[in-house]
Length: 316
Image (tube, rainbow, N blue to C red; front, side, top):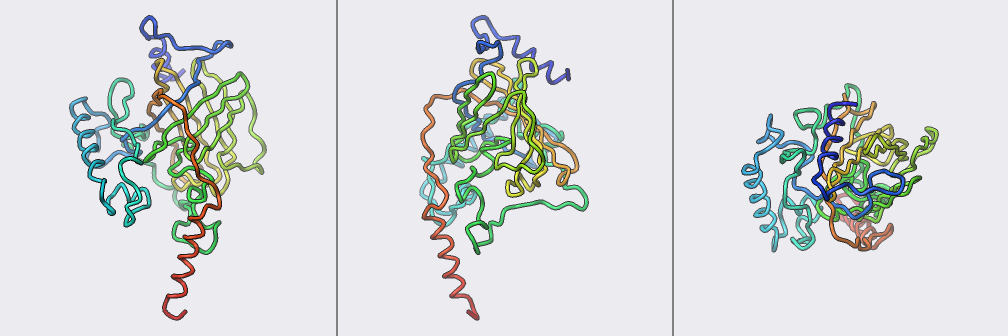
């Protein structure tokens, strides 16, 4: 067992009396419940925190205060970096009522982290392999519904909120886990995606491709390990190909906390594997229906606007 896994086992074993991890009838940790991974910790480490993977509580409080002030400045604005991230710059389509990205940096092993990426140590996505290219959805293409991003078509949540790996985004960062000896279901709030993990199973052949990949799971001590392959060539995680491979680890380190750790690799894309880590915190439910469906009227408006633009273009 690696040093990191030994540490996780020690954390799980070091709970105070009365704080025992709940277990299912078959003896495994009970991961069931409603959880949120909302955090203001970015995926990659910002320049101002280069060579500084963690912060003191005082340093973290200053960052969190600045983040809260930035969020408050959104109200009443039609142009703002947060609105740009949501794709609504110029429309004022979002105010702070709709934004739920959390208010704190992610705390792991008792300290606040400056990036979700913990390996490589610089907190950055590894370089692309020589001769490879990143694969991205065609945000600038308007010729067909199939050219539009999967999230816009309500097939998958944006920003890899559905995963794997499951990243925190601007809002709707809630998940419900249902667990049996043979399957684990992860219901994703965004676009009501449902991931089904088949326990102690095998992946299908390479000709089978799924939007969320094929997830199989097993227990490594008190940690649920989920191995996912068989992605489609349309499910691009930060430029990945269909050969994306994600290994997730779910460790219930406290009654109200699951430590989530995922290692991402793609032999067609990055020069090396990379790992992210952050907590999922217990939260009150229920998870309400996310009213997004493929073929909604916004797609008609988007493509109709593009055709209007084509008609008005010089030479048309």
